[in-house]
Amino acid sequence: MNLAILSRSKNCYSTQRLCEAAERRGKVVQVLDTLKFSIDSDRGDPDLFYQGQQLPDFDAVLPRIGASVTYFGTAVVRQFEQMDVFCANSSSGISNSRDKLRSLQILSRHNIGIPKTAFVRSRSDVLPAIERIGGAPVIIKLLEGTQGVGVILADKVSIAEAIIETLQSTKQNVLLQKFVSESKGRDIRAFVIGDRVVAAIRRVAQGQEFRSNVHRGGKTEPVILDDTYCQTAIRATQIMGLRIAGVDMLEGRDGPQVMEINSSPGLEGIESCTRLDIAGAIIDYIAAQIDFPEIDLRQRLTVSRGYGVAEIYIPEGSEFIGKTIDESGLPEKDINVLTLYRGTIVVPNPRSKHQLEPGDRLLCFGKLELMRDMVPKKTQKLRRPKVRDLRTDLGQVEPSGTAVIDSPATKAEKSPI
Image (cartoon, rainbow, N blue to C red; front, side):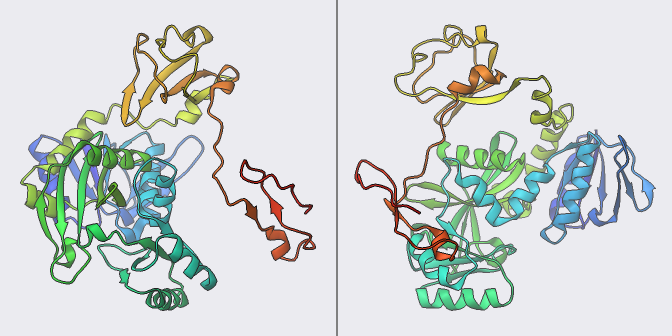
């Protein structure tokens, strides 16, 4: 295997350990400075040059993209992807995880614990947002902060308001986040490779410091995670579009709360604490995956007209309950079940004799017209019975009453708008 590691520093601990692990396994490895690439695009011929020279063939690329070079770094990774070189982490996955707001937005549509978060720009929206996430104390985070920098704990609403106003005056984007008091001063870092957690540590802040980052003096201890924490870390990594990640989680009363997903997690702290060869596990994983290049499923699976991928939901009372996949009649309709989701259990390529239960979700490929009526309807979020017409607030229409949403609790007629 000929491996390229994208890193701005050959001498940092993580890069050195990855090189040592690769060489010990007989792999050819080169460390390439992310900023010394040139990207060429031509019809049917994407190419890369390094320090003015055409790049040799690589079997795989391991991106170690720092926050300061995210834009150009992800462009380089994207070019490797277009050249059909296996990338341990995808360019889109790196971009998703690097942006704190974007990553939380993506996770929020899934059944994964995250701290309540708000993002506002208008000063008048700050107090309502703080109230919605549970009031003070509140965590204020810079979107671009790393290693605990730009994370502030505000004990009072007035203090939070003043901090946000100051940061916004300097053109900084900030997040408001619920303070998980039961996890004050400690968090979990789970190191995910592929579909498993290979190591985990608990980081504990020292003294009055509430940030548990090792760079801020936090102490570490190895920890064995239960299935809930492992599955949360793995799912969060996969939802981001990553294969290798460090997932930071708070230990909340309701279970794990994902704070952040790091696409270039450092190895020094977790290897020193656990005494595990995580660098070796990364190299072994890459070596096992290089024959499976990244595939854009939307492009591949929608080539045949009328065919595509859809998720089928099995609700209570469904005619499919108690039947096997074979008995459900799906195969006869040219609908193939690719994956079955049952709670936190994922069954890839389920057998035709697998019996269906209420709440099952089936990822299927087949004729879209036949699957249309089986796709679950979008659920509407329950709102307050009365809503204001924003067009009236903005002066776009004359105020002529308040719109009322029909519901079992209110039979009022809708006012004209």
